Every structure is written in structure tokens, then in C-alpha cells.
Length: 147
Ligand SMILES: [Mg+2]
Image (spheres, rainbow, N blue to C red):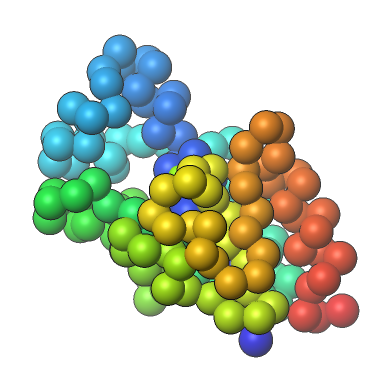
């Protein structure tokens, strides 16, 4: 079954909006336990994730934690439990996304230079330069296992 690994911040979680509205630096933000749970989904992202699931892909969350912040692991997991409970058993928290994936798999990430994303096997979809869910869904729909 083809897998789709989905990053959280910048792909489904609106980290930047929270940063902007609260005028706080990202570096400080990640050190505040529980703050992550106040962040909203990016508009349309939850629907997009669910439509990828319905296409027949095996969908996983693949998120990089801030280094050394044990609480952040819990906050990220809790965010998924609350917001995308259907993925509560599909959460990977790792500093090395290059370990993931095999042929036919996808990684959707807005910071492809980080977390060893570029080592991901096969299809790294970079959520940069205007490429976002709309473009990703078009590709995934075309290649969907349920076709
Ligand atoms: Mg990200």
C-alpha cells in the first residue's frame, strides 16, 4: 500500500499564523508547553488529509520535534488526537524523515532542507513556492491506489 507521510507545521498546522498573531518568535514558541494545542489547522488541510485517506493511501503523520523538548512530543500527539483522531495510531515523531518511505511513497513537507527530507526515497513533495495542498491533491489523485 502506498504511503503518504505528512508533515505538521506549515502543511496541516498553522504555526506561522499563531506566531504572527502573538508576535512571538518560533524559537520561544516551541519552548512553551501546551501552546501548540492552541494552533489552528491550515484552512482546507484537514479535508485534504481526509481525502488522501479516502483515495486509498496509507497516511502517516511525520513531524520533527524541537530538540530536547519532551513536552512537544506530547503536544504534537495530542493535537492529532484532537484534530485528526483517525490518525491517532499513525504518528511518527522523528528528526530523520530520510529513514521513512519506500518506492511508491510520498512525503509532503514545507521544509525539505530540514529533518533529512531530501534523503526520502522517491517522491518528496515540497510545499514551497506556491505548491500546497491543491497541487499535491492533483498528483495524488492521479496516482491513487483506488483507481
Ligand atoms: Mg513543516
